Amino acid sequence: MSRSVVETVLGALVLIGAFVFLIFSYTTADQGNVSGYRVSADFSNIGGLKVGDDVEVSGVKVGQVADIQLDPKTYLASVTMEVRDNVALPDDTTALISSQSLLGGKYLSLEPGGSADILKDGGKISYTQAPQNLEELLGKFIFSVQQDKGKAAGSGGDGAVQSPNPVGAAASP
Image (cartoon, rainbow, N blue to C red; front, side, top):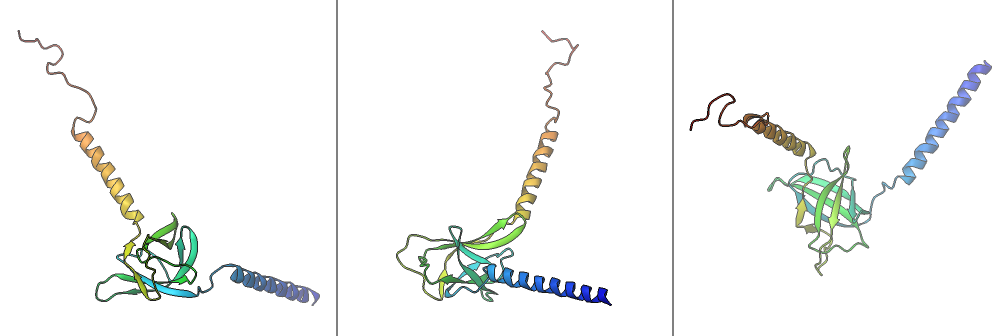
């Protein structure tokens, strides 16, 4: 009987520890909503960008992706982002989707332009760049290397230079 009491107490301690860890990780994860103004941008491909991903300027988080919709008229992905009120973006800002690492994870990078006019709430970023498709780039690279090897093999391939007169043949005077 005393063994089951000890196991119950240890189980309760483990559950309490897990709950404390969950609360700690939630409060320090910096996943809270950003309050600010909303701007949108249209992309031909969002390449895995999700709602809640970071919006950064010069590597500093200034907001997050709030919504992603397909525009039924243009068939472009319309990305709405929420940017902090203290960040004033010029109306010629460029939005591009970048990878955090080779293993995945995307974020929206904003590169402010030099215009004196500032984007307002509900404004639209006109200049966008879709992410590079790593698989497509690797495929093109591998295919071009194989083509180059095929061309080299078809032109003699062994690199030997053949003389116009074979060895042992008499040269005509």
